[in-house]
Length: 473
Image (cartoon, rainbow, N blue to C red; front, side, top):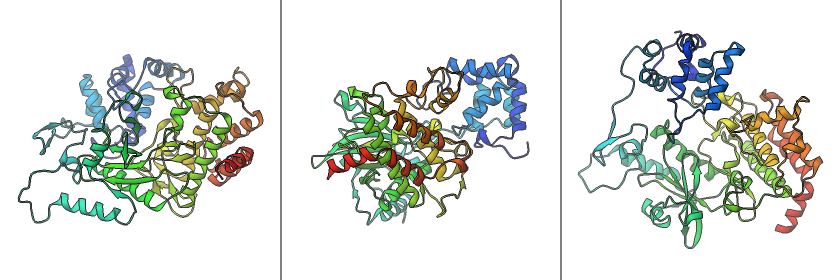
């Protein structure tokens, strides 16, 4: 191998020659299937379905390696060599495991949570030791002169001073959310849904509804990363305020979980409204145009202030009581250099795969990746379809556009449009579809800037915008 491989090495960082050697072990007799069935999502569900199995198997007829394609796909989720070797050993595939890691010890010993005195799943990272500054209160003890936890907590609170945000105690948030009642709000509970790196609950502060996001680590998230997500969200919303960005009320960092408190968005996410969740009516064409323009204005504001969101998607665009679009979830946001064309490269790939640009899958951070993701959102608004559906003939929404452009396919743009919309302006729809396709160019230099996207949307939707402005004034 040309570079050192450790258990924490990302699979996507492996040399192609290594992948080729793994394929020599796993392609014969379809042993890659033994690996595939042991790959699971954070929820515990299998990551790959029988549809995936058939697609990987079909690659053999194209002269491609199912093993390489599988590992390349799984690698985009930041899977590590340690995880792969663990699966290989569990499957009895010791030779390919030894190719990667000759050492038998792959995982750290179970983490012991001092607050509870029992073993924890090392991937859960929710015990007091893992979260450091977010520890549960303990009985008074003679502490060291300056314990590290106290210092971290003071630094965190100092950082948030002067923001205008309310500093809630963790117990206050427990009280206002009914002890983080996990029953869905539609069933009398308080859970609104899953947000970035946590669960969102409804609560009330002085009879005013708020949304409380309780941050909790995902399977492959380290405690320090979660801490950074918290800081990033607070600092971004402290600095950037705009009508089309979500409003933060406050935060809590004195409990077991860090929490962020926002103004309640009465109409939920664009993703849920397009799916008509909880019996909500379909979004009208005019409203979809206004949502597209409003969210683009928020994105324009972010880019103008040299920030890259990195997780633009319909689930992160929320709607207030007037259906005004507001971009949310800034935990992955990165400040970028002043030049909008500048690109930064990071070791860790983050975001939602169904929205990610080719360069984002390589770890590049650039405003043009946000534009690509926004192109997928425009396709969702046009079609009413989710970004990915494993039961569709073409699971990935962004790839459906190839069927529309292919003269040999029966699908037309009219077929693609959401039939639940009562009225659709064909010319407007064609222009927005063309704009979406431009946003989805594989080469980032060919994509429009956010200013160009916003200008086109405002021109297409100028009648709706004038009407909405008159209503609000």
